[in-house]
Structures are given as C-alpha cells and as structure tokens.
Length: 402
Image (cartoon, rainbow, N blue to C red; front, side, top):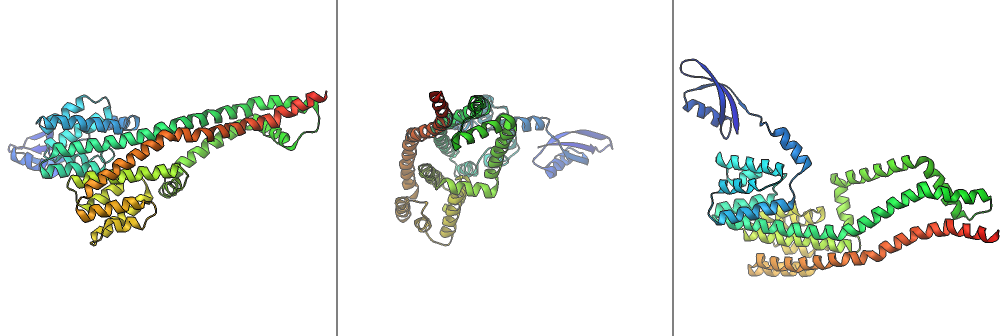
C-alpha cells in the first residue's frame, strides 16, 4: 500500500511525500526510522481505481484467462523463476486490462511481504476459495509449482465442462429465439393484413379463426405494450433467479427436468469429486476441503448435502453416510467413496469417479442437440399448423365456395 504523509523532521521542517508499507502502523515506523515525526498519514487512492472498476464491468475475468495465467505461471515457477518476476512476466502477456490491474496489485502485495495466497485472497471476485487454499497449501508444503499446476488443471476441467454445456445449448436457444422473433413479427404485421381479407368477405368463421383475428388486431395496435411486457418479464425472471430464494428454487427445479436434470446432476457430481480430489491431493483436511467445495459447487441442493457431509466428518463419521441418504447422489458414487474412506485412497477413487462422470457429461451434451431436435420440430410445427388451420384453411374454403 502507498500512504501520503505529512511529517516534521528534527529541525521542525514539514515534509510531504509518499511511503510504501503494509499498513498505517508500518508507515509510521518507516517515517520514524528516517527521523520524521508523522503529522498525518493517509492511504493513497490509486489513480487507476476508477479505470479498474470500469474494466471490471466491461471485461471481467473469464475461466479461460485464469487457466492460461496459472498454466504459464506454473511453467515459470518450474523453471525456478522468482514468484514476483513470474507473475509480472505472465501479466505482460494478458490482453485483459482489468486482469492486468489485479495481477499488478497481487505482485505489489507480495513485494510488500504478503504470501501469494493472501495476495490472491484480496480479490475474491476473481480467485475462488478453492484456488486460494490450494496455493496456500503449496506455499506451506513447499510445492507451489505442483499446487499452481493443480489449480490450472482444475480450472481447465471446469472451463471445458462449461464450454460443452454452452455448446449444446446454443443451437436450441438460437432456433427458439429466431422462431419467437419471426412469430412476433408475423402476428404483429402480417397476420392483420391476411385476416383483413377474411373480415371483408363477411362470412361465418370458426371460433379459432376469430381468436386469431382478435389476436392480430390487438397486436397491430398494442405490439409495443406487449413487447415491453415481454422484456419486463424476461428481466424479472433473470432478477428472480439471481436472488437468494429464486436461485434456490430455480436450482431445485432444474434437477427435476427430464434429461436436463440428469445432465445437471452429473455436472455437479463431477464438480464435487474433481474439486474434492484436487484439494485432498493438495493436503487440505477433509472437513475444510468439503466446505471449500460447497462454496464452488454452484447448486444450493448439493451445497447443503456437502455441508452436512462436512458436519458428519467433523464429529467422527464418514461423508458417505450422508451421501447414502441423499437421492441426488447415485448409490454407486456413495459406495465408491465409502471404499475410498475405508482404504485410505479417497483422493484416488474420487479422481476415478470424476473421470467416469466427465465422460457421461460429454456423451450427454453431444446427444443433447439430437434429443432436442424433435422437440424443436414439434414446437415449430405447432406454430405453423395454427396459422395454416386458423387462417389459410378458411381462405381456401371461402375461395372454393365462390
């Protein structure tokens, strides 16, 4: 940290300047050693603070950028390059300005005497508790390079997992979005013109055609209000699922959706066993490791289960006792974990389970698009069918009677 000071020397002259120190007390001691009596000491507000806030909103830090950072850092540390020089060297390669600012602050804190883990802990919005604890474990055990490699591998697995899921969902989301936009435009601008012909003929119409005519007339006049309501509904839904209660209910509901629920459960199990395996391999105690995993699992249902498992281990029990009682955890996973606990090979068996479920997630995501294609075809077919039966068929019938 940098502090602005105003102080008097032995001759009574007032001096002003900047001093670097860990805290206010350290700054005062440094001034005293230099024969200065502090008058005021204030922490200097960094000139890039506003830039940092702007860059955070604009860019943030992605999992891919974190993965590359730790992968390159591990390479430099393995080559016995000093930690500060390694961090600064990797930072120079970053394109993300916000991430560069964060890494520069981490480097400065290490220069001021902080440990690497403590410096990372000052930025919880970028570095997860799992990452921080793995780095701390490596510093204590003297195997920082191994811990940084573990972190890079773990972030890479999570990144690949998220990428697979996003890739599988892009296609159906794109198709449904385009279908919705086209449907909105058709009902708003094209349908009223088509139904105008039917109304001019002044003949009896089926009830469903009358409904479509009424909908078309309403949309022609109030499409802007409907559009605002749709936007407000989407915004309200996003706001709700990001609230504490809404997020919990949404995460519970996802686990109950056919196919999607199975995929989500496998994803959370993969995260659970992979992250727990990494932490245990890094020497983190079981209870602490479980609590860390509960914070990064990403689902309130699984978080509650993991916290209960940590409480069970804390009183001398086994985590598998809790897992056996939870339907969200497949019995085979609970059984394998029990074997690992009894044989003292928990981190190894967790790694094997993680490999199996990672393959299951990979297989499911590859087939997800194929599974959803029939559903998308049915939805689009229903929309087209409604327009054909409700509008075009009456036109053909009336034309045939003329």
